[in-house]
Length: 152
Image 1 (cartoon, rainbow, N blue to C red):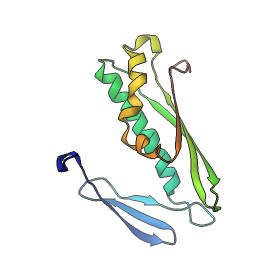
Image 2: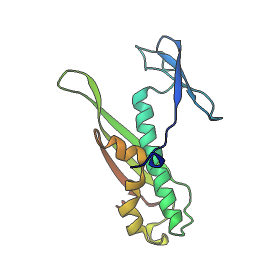
Image 3: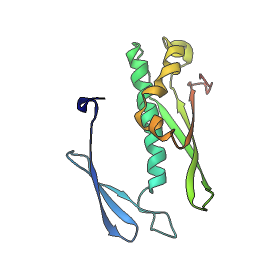
Image 4: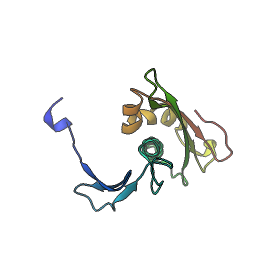
């Protein structure tokens, strides 16, 4: 891999109060994000890191599916994603994200989408966050059409 195959980005965190942090996304105009641990540890004024991780996986999968649908000349309606995570203690008794389950909901009937089988077969592979996380956390994914039928 050459130096041209590597991209970097940065962010900074600043403690606001107790477990509440302000996240700044360097070199962007993205508004700051507040994160916080859930009660009783924190005040719950923003998502905690585990929730951000699950949101990142679900968002990445939805964006990747949308990109793949459009690549094959589909004009899909709005996508929706729901995600759940399971936390469990490891052998040392520390909490870890053990598994995630993401459902991607299409607003179109599967029969109306061109090349859906091919799209379903490859869209996850292009999701940077999910494929990175899968190296340590199981991530289950389902794609559902407007009628709620699982299409993968």
